[in-house]
Image (cartoon, rainbow over all chains, first blue to last red):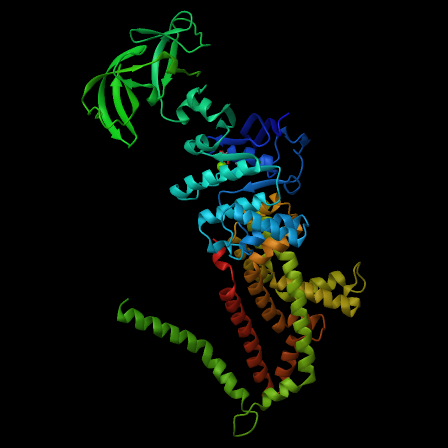
Length: 348
Length: 263
Ligand SMILES: Nc1ncnc2c1ncn2[C@@H]1O[C@H](COP(=O)(O)OP(=O)(O)O)[C@@H](O)[C@H]1O
Ligand SMILES: [Mg+2]
C-alpha cells in the first residue's frame, strides 16, 4: 500500500467544483510534483493533505492511517509556502525549533536538531538572525528546515520557488531535491513551471481543471503525453493533422505511417498527431519526408530552434549545434523528416 | 518646492501649534502663580502631596491596567478570528466597536445600573468588587474603538492566514498561535492601544462618578470646582500623562526589533 494515499478526493467551494475525483498513491520517499496552470486546483489538493481544507468527499491516508478528519496540527506534515511564512518575531533558530518546542522536546535536543538542520540547508551561522535580515532564498531554506525539523511524515511544498530570482530558483530546486533524497522524505511539490517539475520529480501529476490528466515519470509525461492538454502544456509541440487508415496506420499527406503500438482508430477518421521539435530532423531518410520552407532560426547555444512551414502548417525543429555545419537561413527551401515511432497520438 | 509654498506650510504649522500651545502655556503659567508675585511650584506640591490625589490616581492606574488586560484578551482573539475565518464580518465588527464613540457614556452607565443593580439577577453594584468589575467592563467598552483599530491595523501588517497555517502544520494549537505568533507580532499595535486606553481611563469621569468609585476623573472635577490654582496644576499633569502615553506609543513603534519583517 502507498505511503500517502489520496483516494477520490473532491472539493467544491459553493457550486464551484475545484477538485474532481482526484486519486493518487505516493510511495514512501517519492518526490511527486503537481504541475498545471494557475487555478487548476493544485494548492487545494495540497491544502487538503495538510488539513487546511476539508475534502467534500474522498479519503487521505498516511502510512495506513486515515487522516481525512484530523486537524492540521495533528497530522505531522511539513509545509513550505510560496511566501516563506517565517515567524517575523522569532530568530532563524527559534523558527527552525518551533515545531519541536511545540511538541515539548527537551531544550538540548532542540538545539542539537536546529544546528543539524541549519547545517543541512547551508546556513550554519544564521541561527541568531531574524528573518528580515535574510535574502529570499535564505528565508525559503529556513522555511524548509523549519518544516523538516520535527521529522514530518510528508513534506508539502506549494510553489516554494515562485517568489525567487531565476538563478536562485534553479540552484535551490536542486538543493531541495538533494535534501529530500538525503532524508528520504515523501514529498509533494506544487509548481506551474514545467521545467521545474520535469527536472526534480520522480513522478509528475499534470492537472487541468481539477482533474489529474496524466500521472507519470518526467520521461513519460514528456514523451508519451496521453492528452492534448498534457502535450500542449509540457514542452513545445508540433501538431500534425492526419487521417486514420486501416490497422493502426495513418496518412500524413501522401505518406502512410504505422502508428506507435496500441492505436487503432476507425479508418477515415481525423487524427491529431504530435511531434516534439527534437523528433523532427532536417534532410531525409526517415519514415516521412516533407518539403519545407525555413521561416526563422533561433540560435540558443547548444540547441538551434528552426521554424519552418510544411504542408501549410508551422513546425518547430530542434537540432544540436555543430561547429562544422552552419544552420539554414530564413527563406531556405529544405526537407524535414521524422520517424513514425516519434509520433504522439493525442486523444481529444 | 517653491519658497512660497514652504513659507505657507510653516505658517500653517505655526498657527496650528499656537492654537494648541497658547492655551496650554496660559494654563501652565497660571498654575505657577499660587504664591503671590513669584512663579512657584506650590500648586503642584500641594496636589501631589494630597493623599486623595495619590489614592485616586493609584486607583485609576490600577483600573487602567485591568482594562488593558481585559481589552487585549477580548480584542486580540476577536480581531484575529475575524481576519482569519470571517473576513465578511469585518465591517459589522468594526461598526460594533465604533458604537461606544456614538453612544454617550452616561447611557452605558445607566444601562449598567439598571441591569446589574442590587435587585437584578446579577447584583454587581451590591459589592465594591462587583462595582469595580462593572467599571472595568465599562472602561473596556469605552476603549474598544481604539483598541480594536490598533490591533486590527497591527494584524494587517502580517500575513495572518499563512503564519497561522505554518504554525498549525508545525503542531501548534490556537493558544500557542495566539500567544507565541500573533500577539508578539502585533505587540507594538497592542501597546499603542494600551496607552490610549490608559489615557482614556485616567481622565474618565462619567462612569466612575455614577458608579461612585474613587477614581481620578471625579477627583479632578471636585478639585476644579473648589480650589483656585490646583486644578490648573492638575490639568497640566493630566496633559503630561496623556503626552507621555503618546510619546511611549511613538517610542515602542520606533524601537520594536522586527517591524521591518512585517512585509
Ligand atoms: N477558499 C476558497 N474559496 C473559494 N474558491 C477557492 C478557494 N480556494 C481556491 N478556490 C478556487 O479554486 C480554484 C483552484 O484554486 P487553487 O487550488 O489555488 O489553484 P492552483 O493552486 O492550481 O493555482 C480556483 O478557481 C480558486 O478560485
Ligand atoms: Mg496555487
